[in-house]
Image 1 (cartoon, rainbow over the protein chains, first blue to last red):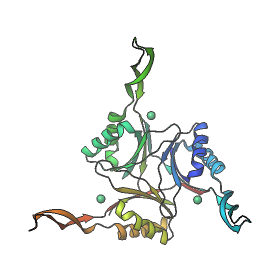
Image 2 (tube, rainbow over the protein chains, first blue to last red; image 1 turned 90 degrees about the vertical axis):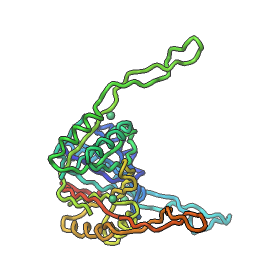
Image 3 (cartoon, helix red, strand yellow; image 1 turned 30 degrees about the vertical axis):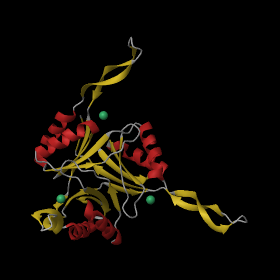
Image 4 (spheres, helix red, strand yellow; image 1 turned 60 degrees about the vertical axis):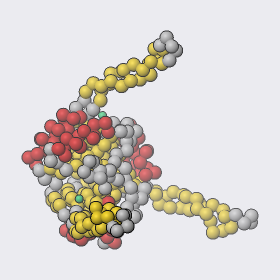
Length: 109
Length: 109
Length: 109
Ligand code: NI
Ligand code: NI
Ligand code: NI
């Protein structure tokens, strides 16, 4: 048995939990409040048979891979109406940190 | 030294923490917000000497074992007054998931 | 790779997170709600190369070491005005519990 500890961005956490559960894994979500630089992260605990670790990692990779996204930010370019025009800005989103830890003993009570 | 990670139902967590502390164990309670299927769980961290793991597991077993319980649910049988009558419904409650992990180094500062 | 799990007092957590980040470590802060005796604790996860464990422990030691502090408590000695006079009382503050756990596999996605 292995324990997968996955630290993911909040915006990916719902889809990730859904995908994991759809694939038959059990997930516990810890409430994570960020430190200075880590606001907006969620920590998941996933207990899994050794043979399934690759499958779990591949689900995390699929859902959380870093990717380009667009956020609308108030633009410094003021439109002819004098109103700030929101312009989409490309940002990198996603990413995850995953620790796999050996479980010496596992009990479901 | 071992680290026991116990995921238990909220309704069992207070009694379990009390029992563990009464027996001289130190417990840290992590705020757990459920995923889709895991609402209402609490995660506990218990650092413990190797020889005491069985004792901790037996306390968790005592407090959290799955058991029959009754919850009152609004009944589909409407009483003569026209009011829904709450009837006790038997449900299975309790249960816990426990991971025991080896601790390479332990420091109390 | 090692995972350092540090349980520290809330009042030390901000300084500790800042020090760890200043030294290039990544920290995830879990929201910890205390059990009966553990109110006011914060749990941090720090993934770190084996060679850096001592450095992390020494930062935790520096920030969280137990030390004398003073809190103002309403004094039993009533001043001449008949008002309770707050007197500083020496208390021991700080302290931390640290688990170092081996990480079998580490992925940054
Ligand atoms: Ni990130
Ligand atoms: Ni359950
Ligand atoms: Ni303390």
